[in-house]
Image (cartoon, rainbow, N blue to C red; front, side, top):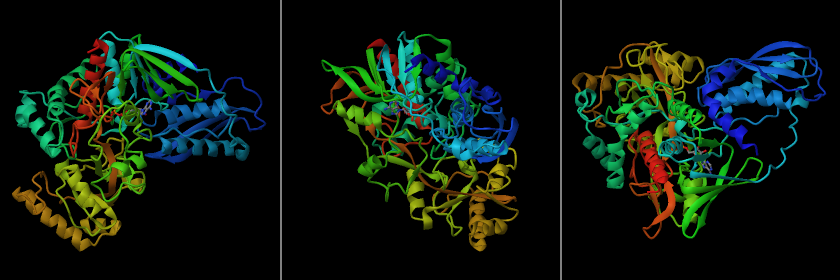
Length: 599
Ligand code: ADP
């Protein structure tokens, strides 16, 4: 394994991805491919996740000389590897039999389809190009070492890595996927935090005490009080820390779905990409902190009762042994994509079998929980699995959503009737959704609440983009919209009229909704379909406020720390929207600092 190459590639992915997309990926010398092309440059287009992806393919007589993505609207940070990596793989291998990028499958397929179309134009024998190249040889086993070793390069792992390094440690972060980011990079991006006593907090009647109360009570008082206190008290310092490294947030906090209060701080960069731009910039600028991609941790190494390292496996199956002089931090995220674990622990939901989709990236398979269990770590509240009522009906992801403030939208079922307080807790909304026919809802907004053509959702899509892609529907009147989505028009009209009465009177409606802003009375009206989707696993490894991992006998496991979604017991039965990014950043920082200091 060429560690250096992998590391440097990982560090530059996000920073240079945009620029790279504009350059041709050009192949080296290479041998003959047995193909004869009509030399020239061919362009072609294929549908991606957010509209068309256009490529240009340069062909010489016998080679694919270059591939370039000319135009696309895929989500930055998430699609980057597909946009840059797939053209390179096609040129390097002189083949169309390239792997899609996990977590960016739609974008990958779009690039491959567009290149295929361009190659056809250039006279390629596509069938021959579909033959995969030879499997890579197994690389040699590798031994590495650092003061602090972190498993997982998501939000918690990267926060831990940077803070460990800031506290004087050398750091290696192992990541099993070909890119950093985990679930965090595609998270909504909203981070709850109260700048106690600030003008904004006073204006919103917010305080750290209220954040504590809502978090604790919002999880039915099942969260660990000391962990909740640590979370809310350190959330604003975590934002200040991110800002000190250059991360930018919008000036005004807002109420995120299930967040209950306007205290969610939204980064300027889309979805969770701002966090990684910030951490990557730090890692790029400093020696002694490295990310090793495509390397899956499999086992914790224990010597004399202390965790002293990690045994991992590289992409070709070779063993990568990483010794940790000071500590190992597990930051592997949750198990939202591990259907067997979901089914094993689920108690609250009708089912969590494969029929229920997930917002999570494919690597959220609970590996860290299993590794910790193997060394006798205690697991807590594993049955607390959070679903959202906002999944894309095809993929389960959050994209394609008509994103607007909680105050400005309603949900109706396929009969055109409301069924829940849209400002309620996430579990309340999703349980109510499961009881609706087909467990499907339509988000309804109007021209007030969702100005046409201007507002982009987190995935860089305007409402017009969504309508053009068939993922949202439009009607000049409510009746027209109802017909477009197959809902009885009289029901939708009556539902909206009843809702508007409460907007005018600001009185709680029959579902107890109290969050209102403007009436839904200005065409055009829009609707988008949504389904229940597994979003966050709130149970996991038991930690104390210093992020030490606690064993089944209540004792600290020396040398072992954990942070982020892999841990359990902070959020209780229900996590407040906006608290995950606060959780992973706060506890990631604590873990990094304590591991570096040997605390
Ligand atoms: P959090 O929000 O807690 O940081 P994320 O899902 O954002 O969680 O990040 C967790 C990261 O850990 C992901 O990038 C995931 O691919 C990585 N990961 C999970 N299991 C392993 C493993 N066995 N070895 C290395 N990395 C892992």
